[in-house]
Image 1 (spheres, rainbow, N blue to C red):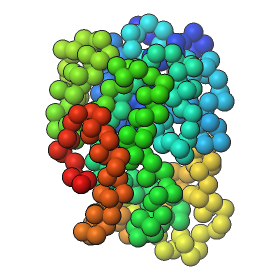
Image 2 (image 1 turned 180 degrees about the horizontal axis):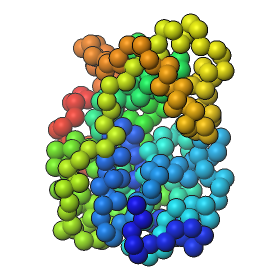
Image 3 (image 1 turned 135 degrees about the vertical axis):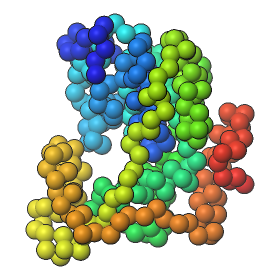
Amino acid sequence: MLKKDGRLGANGSLPNFLVIGAAKSGTSSLHACLARHPQIYMSSKKELRYFVPREQLGRYDLGPNWYRSNFPTTLRVRGESSPQYSVFPKVSGIPERIKATLGSAKLSYILRDPVERILSDFLQIVDEYYPAPDFPDFLSTLRDRESYFYSLYFLQLSQYLQVFPRPNILVLISERFSSNPRLILRTIFEFLSVDEAFSTAEFDRRYNVRHSSRYVAPWFNSYAPEFLKAQLRDPVLRSKIWRLYRLVHWASRVGGRTIIKPQLTVSDDFYLQALLREDVSKLRTFLADPIPEWRPYN
């Protein structure tokens, strides 16, 4: 909802704050909580993906006038949240585009235990893509997937540190936000130079929490016409014909098995920790924070 002292449209303003990720790490809850602050406007559509090229399902081709039309003119902080801004090298050049358009914007990067983030990402991939991979295939091809790069937090952070000064980037730990949201929000408010004392009961609410979802039903695989399957298979159609996609998505799951979070074997857990160990080590050293809430990765 637009705050009373803002105005959208052709006379809008560019944002001066971005939540750059990470996907499946609490960005929806963070975005919603920030939007409650009277001095902050967060875009009504969470993931504008403005700095992502069109061929990668972004909106950079729409130009700065479209981008500014999403934000009011007068509020001190104007922001948006797009986890797709931190998936280098699958999507490159994002920090440079942000700098060229927004100058010295402030950035926040919220991070979750990278193995847990990958598991959560797998659930979303199974729910959204057709045909969905099974978990062993997902793990065997992980190095080539966006899901892997989303979890290389120090690699992503390094791209921004080449363009933005360190004081412009606030790194948050998702597990701490979940356990004490008011404390973390106070830290962000201080970072953004807005009223740190502001609080509301809405800060205790969690957003975009995944509820039970289902695999595509066997009947859909066997009998649905190809043009309906194409609505689930083609990400371009999914972004352009959202209501049709959601209708087909719902119908295709009727009678399907419930999607359950994979239970890692000891060897799979060790494999993922080994795969991410170097990046996590660099992150912990950079932050001077052991992040005890996460796996050891040693």
